[in-house]
Every structure is written in structure tokens, then in C-alpha cells.
Amino acid sequence: MKFIKKNESAGFGDFLVLWSTQSISLLGSSITGFALTLWLYEKTGSSLGTAALAICSYAPYVLLSIFAGALTDRFDKKKTMLVCDVCAVMCTITVLVLFRTNRLMVWHLYVLNVISGLMNTVQQPASEVAMTLIIPEKYYQKASGLRSFSGSLISILNPLLATALYSFAGLNGVIAVDIGSFAVAFTALLFFIRIPENKSVKEESVLNLAKEGLVFLKENPMILTLILFMAGVNLVASAFDAALPGYVLPNPKGGSSVLGIVTSCAGIAMIMGSLLVSVLPKPRDRVKVIYLTMLFSLGTENFLLAFSREPVLWCIGQIIGWFPVPVMNANLDVILRTAIPVELQGRVYACRNTLQFFTIPIGLFLGGFMVDHVCEPFMGAYGGLSILKTLFGTGKGSGAALMMLVLGVSGSFICIITGRKLKKYKYNEK
Image (cartoon, rainbow, N blue to C red; front, side, top):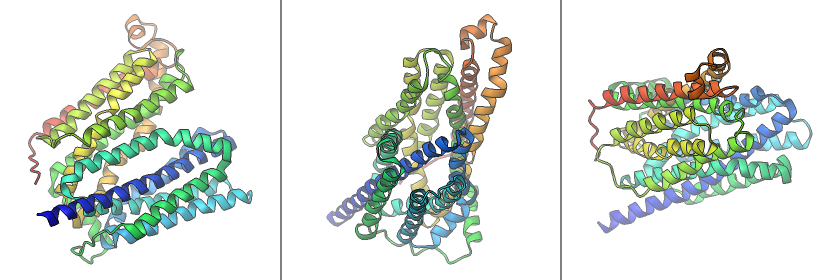
């Protein structure tokens, strides 16, 4: 018994080293990405041009994740992560060389972001499986809470550090910090982390392995339902992200600084939720926790913002909406890690990435389109009606408030319908 406990402690120690150093590297990459967005906007003045950077990074992730997961199941997880890290940092170094020689052009960033996005597409499922292999099962929930905490902290620090570094040291300084953070993570992974080999993976073609991931989801409807549920949540959440600037910026009490504060409240709430979930006991019904937390989140934040005109209430809405997210993430993470055999996790996680996240760019487009071409024109034509004026206010931004109501109703509907469907499934945790 003591031997088992020692191994469990050592495994969690490996996770702490891997988690902390990879988080440092992710922060460095995020800072570079934000700084490149600032540089690109200075050069082009185009919001669409800067958004294309994210699209170039995200497209490989959505389109190729199924095949990338099959590849990672066939190869050594540690070597895969190291190779992807090296390729990604070479893209960053290429940006630095082009910038210092005054040859950096916009299309260079698009191409390099596609390559970097492809590396992330391969690395992400490998990293997920590696975490499963080194984390003792009893620490799954705690580990998920810590990962949510670091992700939330990065979302808060990233724009602050990137703006400060870019102002004082320029793009050279930003990239230097990114390369330094890569060196820390690469050294830790190479010399201090041992990831057990998974020898049960069959030597089959990538197409067959990818098919197995889809077959597993088809044969496990509870997992598939949870993934599709999260796709619906992502659709609503990304549409909210697109509508939020159009809601806050035109408001007489809003503006860019208020938008920054409101946005940062989401990261603060995520940190609070992450700390909570890392100490919470195991719930009796993880599936129920997932859809109830999202019902609470989507059913309060959107309605509060739709009907309020005070920045304080907007911040409260963000905190209410994002605080339950780490709780949901932790329970979903435990279900996936325990229900999916480790030898299938790479390809199943990759299928999950495609199915769960393809709605994000759709939501961003729909959110912006609905505000600009449906809700704002509607409020411009009928906003003088007393009931609409009372509910959503007047002038520019009232259409975005109406959009918040639409999102609140849509999100609540998704949660209620999915919750009723999930009640028929039984999840038995070991």
C-alpha cells in the first residue's frame, strides 16, 4: 500500500512540473499572439485582418483534429510533444528574423499561424493522453482545477503583459520572452518528465484509427451527447463574445476601458471557480453537475446583461456566468478520462475537438451578423416602443442587448433539452 501511495504522489508531482512549465510556455505564446495582433492592426487597421490570425490558427485544429489524434495514438507522446514544441518555436524564431530584417509581411503571419496551429492540433491530444498517463486517477478532479486555474490566469495576464512588453521592448522583447518560456517547458519535459508508454495501441492506418474514435463515440451515446451539448454551449458563448463589444462600447457608461474590466471579470471568476473545484469533494452525479452549471451560467449572465445598464451589473453578470465553468470542465474532464480507454483517448479527444469546437467560429460569425444586421436594425425601427425601450434601452447597443436575450433563451433551451436526454444515461465512476 505504501508503494502505491508513493507512485501516486510521484505521478502527481510529475503532473505539477509538466503543468507549471507548459503553462509558462503557453503564457509566452499567448503574449506573442497578442503582440502580433497589435502589430498587425498597426500595419493594416483592419479588424478582419487581425481576426484572420485566429482563423489561421484555428482552422487546422477544427479540420484535422480527427486525424491528428489518430497519429498521436500511434506515436510516443513525449516525443510528439517535443517535436511539436520545436516546430512551433521555429515559427516564432522565423517571425523574429523576418521582423529584424524588415521583411515581415502580413501573409507571413498567416502562413506561420497555420503551421503553428497544425502543431497545436497534433500536440493537444498527445498532451491530454500524457496527462492521463501520469496523473493518478484520484487526482483527476484536482488536476483539472489546477489546469483551469492556469488557463484563467493566462487569460488575465496575457493582454496586460503583452501590452506592457510591446510598449517598452517592442516585438523583439515579446518574442524573446516567448522563446525563454519555451526553453523552460522544453527542458522540463525532456529531462524531468517520464511519460509511460502505452503499448496497447494497434499498428493500423491513420484512417482506421480515426474511424475507431468516431465508432467509440457512436457506441457511447452519453459521451457523444455531452460533446454535442458542449458544442451548443460553445455556439452560444462565442456568439456572446462577438456581441459583447457592441453592447459595452456604444453605451454611455461603457467604452474600451470598461470593456477591458468586464472582460477581465470572466478570468477572475474562472480563477475563483478553479480554486473551488480543486478542493470540492467528488459529486454524486457528475453528468447532472455539467448541465446544471451551464444552465445556471447561460440562464443568468445573458439575461442580466440584456436588461441592465450599469457596468457593475455587467461585471457581476460575467462573474456569475464564468464562475461555474471550471466546475463543469472538471467534471467533464473526469468523465472523459475514466470512460475512454487510455489507448483510445488520443483519437477520441481529437474527434471531440472537432465536434465540440467547430461551433466557435460559427458562433462568432452569427453573433456579429445578428447584432449588425438583425438586432440593431430591428431596434432602430421599433425601439421607440415603450416595452422595448424599457427592456433594452435606446440607441446603438440596444440591439446587442436584444441579442443577449436571444442568447439567454437559446442557451437555457439547449441546457434543458440536453439535461432531459442525459437523465437516461448512467455514469458509474470507479
